[in-house]
Amino acid sequence: MSDGHQTPGATVAPALAEIQFPIRERLDQVPDEMWRIVSDPGDDLIREVSRHLMGMRGKLLRPTLTLLASSIEGTPEPRAVPLAAVGELIHLATLVHDDSVDHSPLRRGRPTVNALFTHQVAVIFGDHLYARAVSELARLDDLEPIRVLSIASASMTLGELRQLASYDALAFTEAEYDRLIQAKTASLLGAVCEVGALAGASAHRGAMRRFGERLGMAFQIADDLLDYTAEAAVTGKPSGLDLREHKVTLPLIAALREMSPAARGRVEVLFADPTPSDALIEEVVGIVTECGGLEYARQRGDRFAQEAEEALATLPAGPVRTSFTDTLSYVLDRRW
Image 1 (spheres, rainbow, N blue to C red):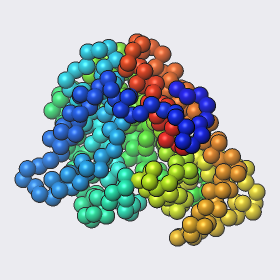
Image 2 (image 1 turned 90 degrees about the vertical axis):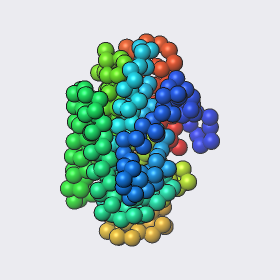
Image 3 (image 1 turned 60 degrees about the horizontal axis):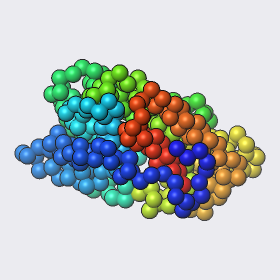
Image 4 (image 1 turned 180 degrees about the horizontal axis):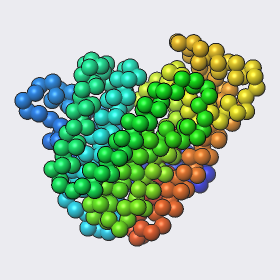
């Protein structure tokens, strides 16, 4: 894992294809498994929405983690592939619901379900994804994956409710931010790593859960940094979207502690404006940068990544452990 900050354009993290190499053959089976679980031959709308979602799926990071965890001891069980598909379907369900709640028009550079169809379809289809995922877990007939993934799903829902209940955005604290991203992001990444271990390396389930949760914290901080530093072509969503939607993330939380009254006043102007201009957003990004918010967030992301790497200490050496370590570099490199 890289231990220094990289400059834009530098060669840093390994490509995701390298990380996925040890489990490539099984990972290629996951999209077909997802389609099998969610599609309904007798319902044209379900098939149409499913086809759209399958076309906009991401890089399959969560299935990658599940399949790597199942391979730690070199004897992955066949159920690892459907478990990987279930974890990704739960993730997709949260994205569909999030986009509907936020009225987001784009996800990964493509129209969201709520934009292409309706908000009603998006809400119900998100429920459909959850329901089909649970049905598949029941088919596998093992209580432990159900328990692990249901706890994570409940945690994500609680995180969403906490976010909606936060009325004074600029009073949002770092401790509240940590609780939010633990619930919304880290809980599922910890769960998909743990259920992977249950399908071939159960002795490592605790280490895998710890790794996934710490990775999730670093992942979300990196994602929040990207909103300040990356172009829409990189993120698949408009640049500065968090500020535009008055969302407070770690870079701003850290910067607010160091701002002059005048600088804070400019942030308050932005948050009072329902449609802040690009110029105002750019100004606030500059203020957050000057007040050290980005650097503070990078340092916290690095610490979480270090804790994730420490969780791998008990894993046997080999390609799988290397892929887990490389995943940390890959995730942190996203922030540039």
